[in-house]
Image (tube, rainbow, N blue to C red; front, side):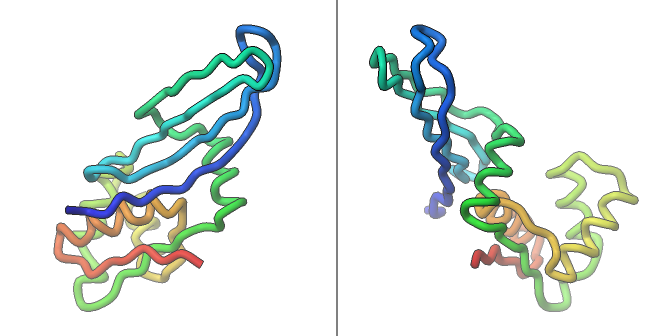
Length: 139
């Protein structure tokens, strides 16, 4: 069974019911081979609560996670660390063209490709499926 990998952030928003302050916890998780974004909210004024599960992480929250937790890096090694397998995975995961995939591959091979820990672990697992020795590292 694969380990669940996650990072969470806390933030505030305005309650749609009463205008009070919503306490929000957002979590990006790698579960069952998929990235997901879950949010739990609770209003300190009216007690309204909700959970929204399995969405895409908003750019602002992703930036907040990177700021609070630091970026994770993707490391590849061995003879499989250069080549078609990496570009195939990058194109499939990011929906990018061949030229862009080559640029991203260069960053991956040099150790400069980074993101949230769940994102990098997801990519490492996909690369491993294609025979590339890959690991996500986090400071």
